[in-house]
Length: 140
Image 1 (tube, rainbow, N blue to C red):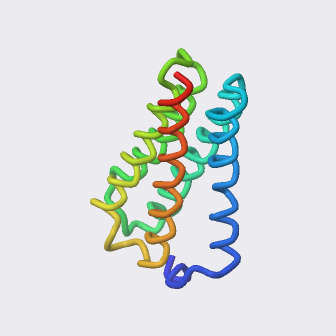
Image 2: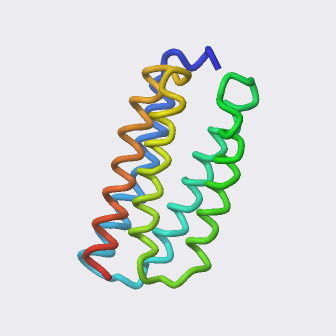
């Protein structure tokens, strides 16, 4: 994972572009039509599972704590549960899940992650969590 020492412009563009559905769906839900909640929660679950995959990739080289693999699998299963549980509170649970995963990474992986990678992850995770939380507050 040493090749992630510096995040490329392409990765930044892809990362920040991934926020468009979070912000766009959130604004749409809050301002226009709250019946599109499934679209936002599905996208959030997809991205949260992807973040679990990143943990998995870092755990493959053996430089992360052993529980990192378990958290990776748990993240995917937890996101799947968002899709099958009662819609009430889904968005707020998802928002806190993004923050919880970010806190886990900050505590256990900050020394392993390249600084530019963690900075990007911070911006992306906290923006996604804020979008989900605001949607959850305003439409529920």
